Amino acid sequence: MEIKIITVDNIPEIKEGDAVEEIIGDCLLEQGLPLQDKDIIVIAQKVVSRAEGRIVKLDEVKPSPEAQDLADKTGVSPETVQLMLDESSDIIRSRPGLIIPRHRLGFVCANAGIDRSNTGRSDGKAAVLLPLDPDASACRIRKGLEKKFKTRLSVII
Image (cartoon, rainbow, N blue to C red; front, side, top):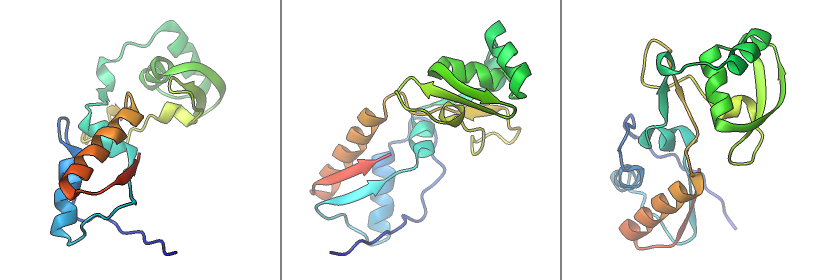
């Protein structure tokens, strides 16, 4: 059995509304890498989030009193804390500089998976949220790639 890990080159900056499956498929073909049965495609969550418009402008977020209180205790911006509260079912633990919530999708991860890097804004006043339904996103991408390459695949986000 052999395992190969191959990166897809020349993927452009993903914007809201982009069809990730088409972009990846076209890049694979340009690279001379047609997909084969049982291939597994692994896609960074941020790519899917950007395509699905899961970027939030922090100056449009109105922190609640609960968010302000947790921000005061942790030093995390109140707007970011509000997004964490909005995306989570409960807060498991917090300390200065870190909040660990249970995400609404059921898993526990630092900062509810919210990332303020690579948002497409140079001022740092935006955040990328996790996809609303990563399983549905993976299924949509898988179906698009399977149709393009006429093969059976798996997609992991």
